[in-house]
Image (cartoon, rainbow, N blue to C red; front, side, top):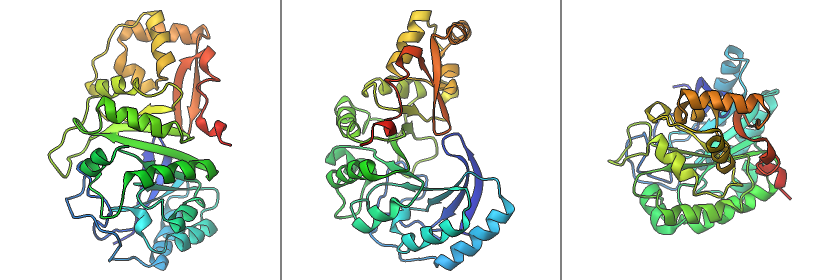
Length: 317
């Protein structure tokens, strides 16, 4: 079984070639309610380990077949930071990647491990999940292995964000009735304000989950996004745009909405009716609305807000 999959065309990260660091079976320190993989108890170590040499051979072959990718993405049927030879693997990838970026998709649980922390600093891009900010909700939604706690995770993400020089992304996946409450969002908001990052992607369940839980609609995600601080670079990631109900927005409504939360073209197409889209285009043509780019994603916002809504990476000390 090859450890390589893709390429996958992603609006968030470009054209990605994936490396599965647990290709044969699920190995994870979480057993998330929303996981698309079959339920399995959370574990603390990988037992089925793919040699670095095997991965590099597979990757070299894949790069000859797909030379025009943007990123090499480290992921797994589980958590990639559990791979015991991650530092060695990244070092070898760096010798063959050329101008391609390296990216890891992590659940953040082992970032408190100094070795993992310093290994992830060597990547060009890092995506860290943060589904909850209180212990009770964290245990319910992510079902972590023994010894993993949300306080350590949040502290580690905050520390990492201030020393990491690449592109940092935070991802939150919302599950109905669990982490979508006002209390949990307030706790998440407080944690996120101390994390300078490129983008905060919020989404929901869009594949059959491991357990009987439900996701949110796009409109619910949009409403929920307004409960976060307006300086946070929130991006709604949803395959349920088509289920949204378009509404009528006046010129002032459009400016007010974009002031509270910058929107992508997909968001606008989902939320605005045809007359509102025409008003949006008029405002854009008049220069009252402008756009900013955050790692492959274009956002629209009032022109006067462009400096205030700058990516938080510009605020790193």
